[in-house]
Image (cartoon, rainbow, N blue to C red; front, side):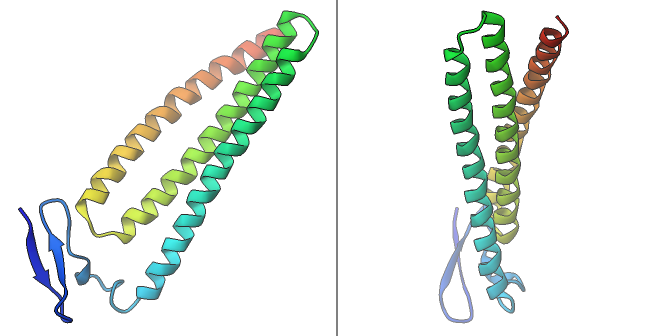
Length: 150
């Protein structure tokens, strides 16, 4: 069920159950320039988060290949791979945190209820991924400590 509302310029803005019209906020009137700046900042944070994920992926592949090609014993190889997994996990967690920050900024700038619901789902999913990844990293770190103690 959508309703059309008209702003002072005669343009219509669609509103419905899951969104609000953007025309009501002070930010969109007096401080429209601030919205643009914050959108650029959020986009830069998005790009930085993705770059961190890509960098972590590349470093993992290089380290994984290096560990696999090492001509030492299998314990050394497994230790090398586990070390690379821990490093990759750190990059993933850092990238996810930045992407969440960007999503929060985007949602704060939008007055749409659908964006808020979408943000909630993203935060839940990313938080679950972070939680389980952090748990797995703790297990791998414990294995690495056990290997060093041997």
